[in-house]
Length: 109
Picture (cartoon, rainbow, N blue to C red):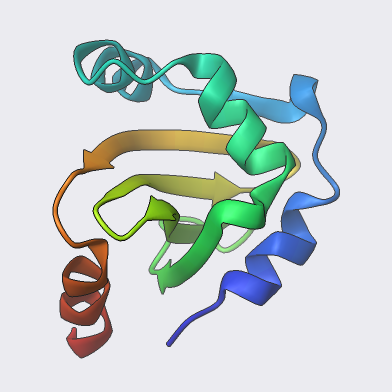
């Protein structure tokens, strides 16, 4: 199920200072040549967010989403985010294949 509309609405309540990138996500972004500014820009202005799958979170006071920010048919970013009073970016991936196939696999789970 696609929760992108819901996630876009929830992201509106966050500002630049409330988006936190975890150490793991920073390492992955550096390895994959994704700038921290681009990650924050995608979350602050989520017009590229085309898919958000809800995941099970460890704590009851948080919501966890697997998000796909698509730029074109063969280039997208995938972030796992946790929403509390902060927006935590837990991991960052670059998709250079057809991202729709990745989303289809996720929807079947």
